[in-house]
Image (tube, rainbow, N blue to C red; front, side):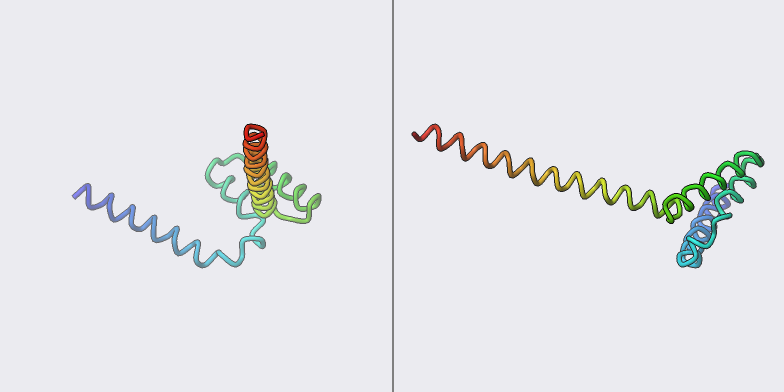
Length: 106
């Protein structure tokens, strides 16, 4: 009985999260108060929710992007830099190996 209850509740939670993602997918940027609202409801801390809203507003005013978009762009840029440096490193290693081979041959 007890295990069935937990399985059902886990299924309901998973279904709710999945459906929420489907329905809220297009309105992510228009829900600026959703994050602080969830913080307020879960923690009950008005100051923390206010600081979160102020931080989100400051990021939006400074960059023109919301916090999630800014983080996504920074991560993508970092990924591109790492990929570029890896390509350059591999190219330099190949060149140094070719130079060593030429030196050893002569």
